Amino acid sequence: MEYVAGPVLGIETSCDDTSAAIVVGKRILSNVVSSQADLQKKWGGIVPEAAARSHTEAMLPAISEALRGSAVGLTDLTGIAVTNRPGLVGALSVGVTTAKALSLALGIPLVGVHHLESHTLSPLIESDVPFPHVCLLVSGGHTELILVKRPGVYSKLGGTIDDAAGEAFDKAARTLGLGYPGGPAIQETGAAGDAKRYSLPRGLKDPSFNFSFSGLKTAVMLLAEREGEALDRPSAAASFEATVAEVLSHRAIFACRETGARAVTLVGGVAANLRLRATLARAASEARVDFFVPGASLCTDNAAMVAHVGAWRLSTSRGDDFDLDTEAVSSLPTGEAI
Ligand code: KG4
Ligand code: ZN
Image (tube, rainbow, N blue to C red; front, top):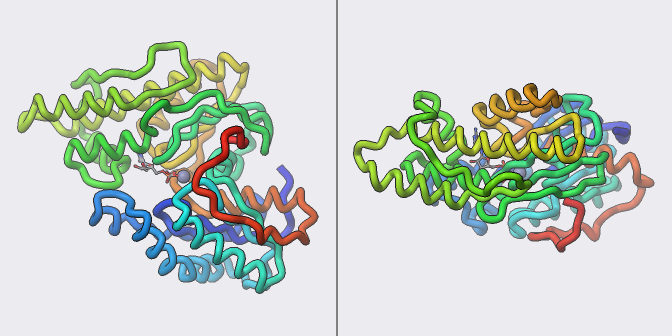
């Protein structure tokens, strides 16, 4: 990938993390993430209005810290990249408005970045991933299998027909009384459990590029009801985690086989899950497919992955065009790239 010369500021506020980062091409100079986890713990999930207000408070401190941490001054910036779609529109607007104001004040170009594209290209920051490859994107709002033909050219192979993988983690954690966000809580509790103790349903029948997690969610609820006080929580968490990891890995390798891709990447917040990383690594090795996964801090929402896409996109534009028409978009028109 080609990148614009000079530092790019990335801004990410699509969901519940306020993040600012400075990159020069693939080199991350700083990546500041201010999480709203405490706020969400209080509410038991994301409240859009509260998330937007919290972004407003955290945005400028995050940018200041990112600049300080990278020793880059505002006037050294070459361009600005901001997540503008898809996401909570009130939350996105905080980042987009901040980015527009900075772009106008500094006289530097602004590029709006698709959140899923920034996740999809995140493995390229740390590794030379060959094309085409299959990308398994698993986050709180999305679960997709994407054929990445080259940067900017994607074809969606399949996705969830109900809950996203991260949503399934969050709901299962709530059922098991493990708190929010569910992914890290299940991982922590499940580490001490026996993943074979409870047998859980795997969703759609093979072969398929699609996923269904609602049956699994219901099965965990029924298991908790049936076992009551006798429930072995660590083993329930481990069994759930292992089932999700196996289903996701199985489908991703199937997608490689069907498309002829020789590499698979794992991205999005759920890609931070250790059991999933290990399961897909093993499946890929058995199938003789190369496997790439970013470090955990590049899996969950962060602005470095946004700045990375911005640095690439700015290298292909004239570099003097202000994209001040950039608007926050909550959902995607059908047919958009990913
Ligand atoms: O990509 P992300 O940070 O935000 C979205 O774009 O949705 O993903 C958030 C999701 C949450 O559902 C969270 O529970 C899940 O990622 N997650 C994990 C882990 N860390 C975060 N799921 C499983 N294991 C983890 N270690
Ligand atoms: Zn995300």
